[in-house]
Structure formats: structure tokens, C-alpha cells
Length: 127
Image (cartoon, rainbow, N blue to C red; front, side, top):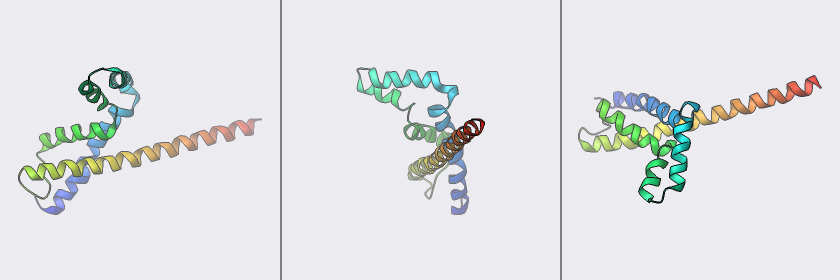
């Protein structure tokens, strides 16, 4: 694969990785399993069990596992055509996916702030 195509794949493949990692670790649809994992990550006695359940609560941690899944699914390699290409691709995908998630988080935060400000203004206007 040409380097230009590899870079395209990098930025496009990071999108579903970010989407899955964010959805599982933040969205309402997975709230109950996430709360269970939070409790287990804080209260289990065995360190290995705490770390296992923590990975479902942290988008950065979870994105590594989603990336491994997508690397297996697609066979995507970056720069090199052997196992090193998988390794480089994995870390690059995690990094780009986390940039996407941070941007998304900032946008959501700005929208929530704007909605709150509008509600306050509407309330003041009614009074």
C-alpha cells in the first residue's frame, strides 16, 4: 500500500475506533454495564480484576483493545509490511482516535454550556 493510502486509512480507521470507545465508555446506552465495571474496578480485591474492569471505563484504555480488533479485522499496517507495521499502526490509530474523542468531548461540552446559557437567558427573560 502506498504511503498516501496508508495515511488515509489511518485517519479513516481511527473514526470507528473512536466511535466505539466513546460509546462504550460514555454514552447512556452502556450506563449499567459501565457502572458495574466502575464498581468492580474500585472494589475488587485482586489487582488484575480491577485493571480488567477499569479498561471498560476509560476511553483511552479501551481504544487500545478496539484498535487491536480493527487491526485483526482489516490487516492494516503502517509503514512496514511485517509485524512492526501492525505495532506502528496500532499506536498511531490509538493516538488519532483519542484526538478525535478529545475534539468530540470539547464540542459536546461547548454545546452543553451553550444550552445551559440559553436556558438561563430564557428564565431571566420570563422574569
